[in-house]
Image (cartoon, rainbow, N blue to C red; front, side):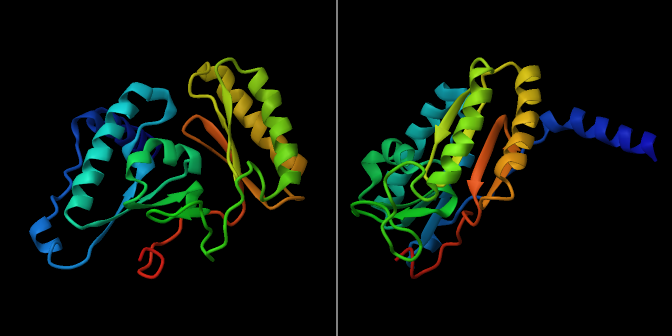
Length: 222
């Protein structure tokens, strides 16, 4: 069994670079006959912080696509785990025409609207970490400890989360420190505050429990 699984894994790794997913083309002539909402995953389109040059090129293309969709009377919504400020800066020229969903569903910005609201329509606080200052300060202290010891890493501040990025750091040391940091956070405050820790894509994320991607519905998206 082990030899079979090993051979299968090797075959998949060898074959993977030669496979490409073929996405079906949209038939816009059919969509134009009725109001259509197009939801785009910002993080799937734009590369990670590590590939800044490639991200900028894709961002230009995304702005162009959004413009063309809006010109053809499509409703466009962008959802992302990025912060409100990042989405506003990246899509500044489109804010009056699209819906934005930031920080994994924590806040929503409607076309032409001033400020951001949560899913109940309440205005979202503008200060970083405003939702839970106690857990915010404690976690930031822990992440700062590891960031100072990992050259090339940095901390991203959000309202419902803190993220330690180590995409540019040494693979060996950053991976080891990430495991230590995850255990440190869980042992220090995991049972005291409503947060959970996730390690993925060379970053460690500490999220407020309950902040997840939201489903779009006709009432929320107009």
